[in-house]
Image (tube, rainbow, N blue to C red; front, side, top):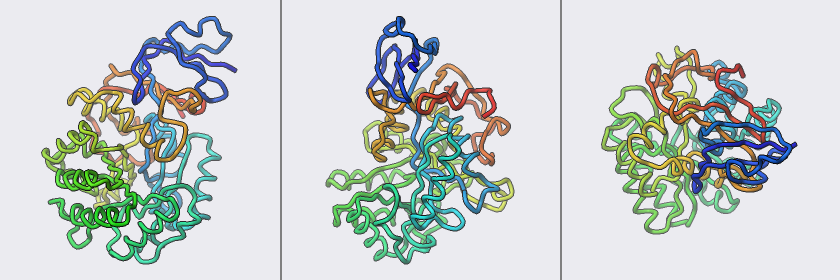
Length: 398
């Protein structure tokens, strides 16, 4: 069965044109003008000039499943992802029990696949129990990514061995840079001091390093120096650190000062920042009252970023697509994230003119913890397609 998505504003990391897509068997078969496929016998989806992007890819999310499912579970997290335009997520290992073996990874991914909503990748912990002491089995880890996110790896020797093991097994460690000697810390020292160590280790070992949620101007300065030396560093930033400053809402790392936020935005403009991860971190209302750090971010990411980066700071929509889609797919080595022939038809339709107000009742996540409640942003997901099938439509119950 052929499907034509007609009369679209097609945008990805390199494309920006009016046109149509021809889909077959869940893949992009052809790209043409608005009228290119008018004579074909096909299902026609006329999107009336709205913007069609590759669906988003988030390499940094928490679905709390297993063990903490009063906050979120695989089903509600997947629904939240679809409502935000995401069809691919990589989940952190700080579940209960900790996801620190290949068997636990497979169990989670099997349950997620059975839901038939999105593609879920499950990171394996770097150390057993997230204790920062003994490395997990890197050789038998399923997929590319390992992380002790939620905690920094305090031991210099353990971090050294982790990067050595990752390099030997073609894996990538996602690092939460937070030195417990200085945490909790509003100054940035906890992040920056551990970052110095890890950049030096990566340089000496010629190893790759994925830096989660970089948040300070000084951190980007350190990363720029490392990249100038040829160190292979992937820099992730979050929507909330790009959109907010001097805000007391509790997250780790903290929401920083305006100079830090502006440095992150400049890092996007000059190519220092590689990817945006939501760090979607659901918590119950009671958890937040008791001081739990984090926020739900999958459903608000595009609107917040389109407003904060494209409209307010002149960053192109193509660049935003690169950060939200193309780079994550490239890291995972999957044929998503671009509008290219043979790529999966994972797509998101956006109304760039729509203004939405973030309201708890409209969030699909089980938790509603976000500093964006009652704030208005421009750009709204109309529908999300996975493998050529529309899985989410605005206003229709999932």
